Image (cartoon, rainbow, N blue to C red; front, side, top):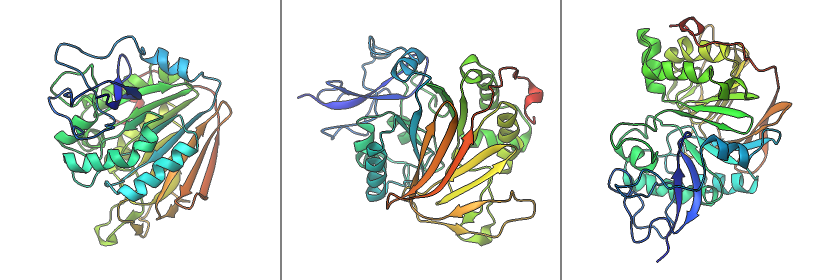
Length: 354
């Protein structure tokens, strides 16, 4: 039997999820010894290999593949969505809409599932299969995802058999540099003032040639730096202060254009320190509603609590972001003009707030 699946091809760049055929006949085993998808006729997003091999060879080679597949002069189109909570119907709708919009890649900003277990990840993968059959999906870890099942589902074939190498990573896709981040580690850095491994890694990544020569630098986290939506409002959640202390100053200094997040179940948009902040958590979780803004909260701040996804087009002259409802109608649009690349920025401890 020939089993169609998605090989996770990794050399220098992690988590490139590519459609391929014949990669794991008869229920092959993943990196950590099991597969969340062993019963599927068409499993997706899992790296198949045996213990003697590190990764499939002869197919792609890291950033060379990314630039060859998508030249810097051509706009990059991507779908961004979050907080599906394994809601099959809504996730499937978004996956089909994104596929039909001819995106080149997709990012989920966390909480693919409501509970981190094998069954819910199977449901998630079934739902997004129309999209990930044709484009790569790059995941961000959310608070509901965290657990062994997440690291069984999303794998780096070049990573060690222990640890959590998929928690944060970066990619260069054409003219866009992107970092997918683990919010927990960043919040810890902001709360303690200690330079955590992820902060040091991000600082160096933002100073790398891949980031500095990109037209656009984008960051993806799960919990937002700022937000207004929650349910119930009495809890008073308005985003993560730790991200405001560490991530935002570091990102602004490096010329990051947009910070995408989820966690709040709805859509929000605002601007801080010249950067656009987008909350896109409308892919299936129970919707939140807007709460009263605390003193000093950024203004203006757009909120809309409905199911949706975000279409991003990164061109040479502008970055265009549209929030699209399940009816296919864009209810928000923002266009960010391109600016000069910040090639002069150097990664120093003073570049952030630690």
